[in-house]
Amino acid sequence: MSNQWLYLILAGFFEVCWSVAMKLSDGLKRPLPTVVLAVTMALSVVLLSKALQTLSLGTAYAVWTGIGAAGAAIVGVMWFGESASPLRIVSILLIVFGTVGLHITET
Image 1: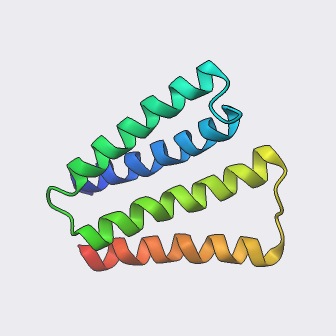
Image 2: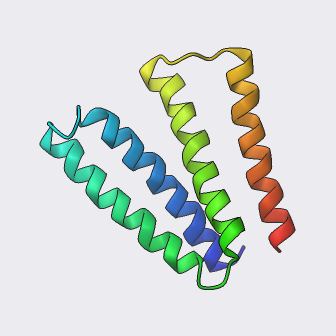
């Protein structure tokens, strides 16, 4: 795996982190989660920009948002008691498979 893909995966991880921090910030009223939100958002965007130096825009952006969307949905189910209905799980899996498919077709 190239450095750009590692940057992209880390960018997606930080996207999940900032979405969780946003939830925990209670509308940006709680200082610590708000700071975590700002830092992880910045890290996510910086790492995405590093990945975009060599990866195609469409693939990189789709993978970044896919990791963020699937990751946030999984965290929502596991930590925030959100629905784990079969259709929701299948939908998350479709995002994951699509993300993997984009990775395979990019290389």
